Length: 267
View 1 (cartoon, rainbow, N blue to C red):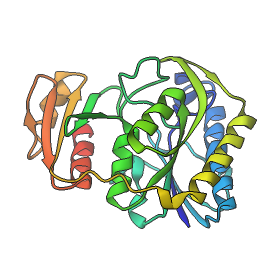
View 2: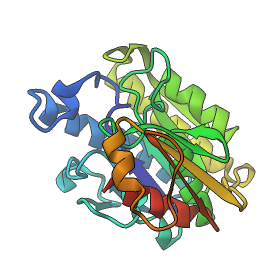
View 3: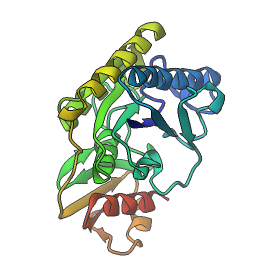
């Protein structure tokens, strides 16, 4: 089995704010090690289920957080910015399943820790065919376009609830209980790693029950920006329509097409 892992940082145990997730934060170096450790725990569990190959894409901020020497020896690392598929770069290579490690809830989720959707500075909300999406839903649809099911998601309790709502019978590993945007009650690292190993192994043992999350066409996307200036720029993109002071709309023949349009709007 080949496994794709998209790893973010806000949903890691112990991470509650900029001191951990920002490169300038005093605890950032520690948090990036936590990031690798949670990824490695999932890899270890997957190996027990028979997985042989892993590709990990660094999906946080500029995507230069994971240090290659810290990763499991069976994992290859994709890092760096301006990648064609952003948080999902590499999924196009073909995989049996995908894991989302260290994920967080969509922007506007009450009491969620560090909730946002792709860009805190730019994006207020994203809707596909009228349904609000966060990073879990968006990225699962990208995986689905390539025929890959998302079988494991880790993060806070609000993230777990969102994952189950979008993905159904997914292995949702709760590593912390959110108290608010900047606070959470985290489990110990030993417990978190155990849960990730067990969750990954169980997900792959049950792999036949998981199906790729595919959104059939036609697909309409609405992006509501934080400010009017982002909408000013987005409306310059071909086939994008301004429908409100901070909101634009576009349509796509498939999810990959509309996702690439979304990424272009964020440049």
